[in-house]
Image 1 (spheres, helix red, strand yellow):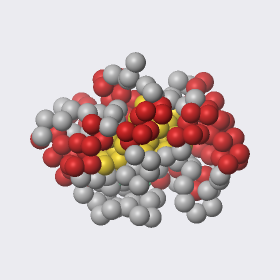
Image 2: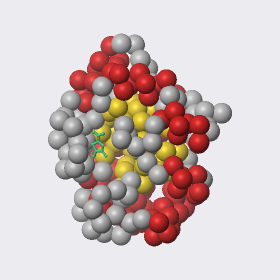
Image 3: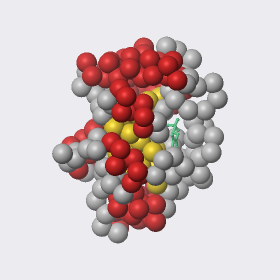
Length: 221
Ligand code: 3NM
């Protein structure tokens, strides 16, 4: 059975993304601290200069996933469908330049499928192709993705909601504890981020601060 939208929205609240290229520390330790700080989902995104491949990538993925399993944090693999299937991850996230979402859906059955979208056309296609959630960004300028588009994600999330589309949405790009509430106000169900946690001196505190900023946003509603 495909994941239900309300359960998906809960998982998206504080969605941490990381690969070895995003930290100078030990990835397992960063993830462990992020989990202690309260992240609700994790994506393994091993991409860009100096990233691992083949067996080294798979071994790290397995170790990170083990940690997530212990703490009941869903584990998503970015782009690499074969890896997600080989290790039986909870799902896959693809961008517009990766394998097409309808093909991915056929391969992964009922596992979670996330799709990055940057236009209304991409949003509608992703939904038609079977996305369980959309990643919309960048909301703010980001240094974690070399080919990131100009920031405009906040406007797109508002447009999606104005069109009456209720699919679970997570905002991405330059999100911090200071601007997280503004992202939620556009109509997002959660925030996803790399550097706000992976570059933090204390990833546990960074995750906690992000969590608190979401809680204070809920109270204002
Ligand atoms: N995707 P940080 S922005 C992985 O716009 C990714 O689709 C984006 O990293 C998109 O939280 C981005 O450090 C990088 O800004 C997010």
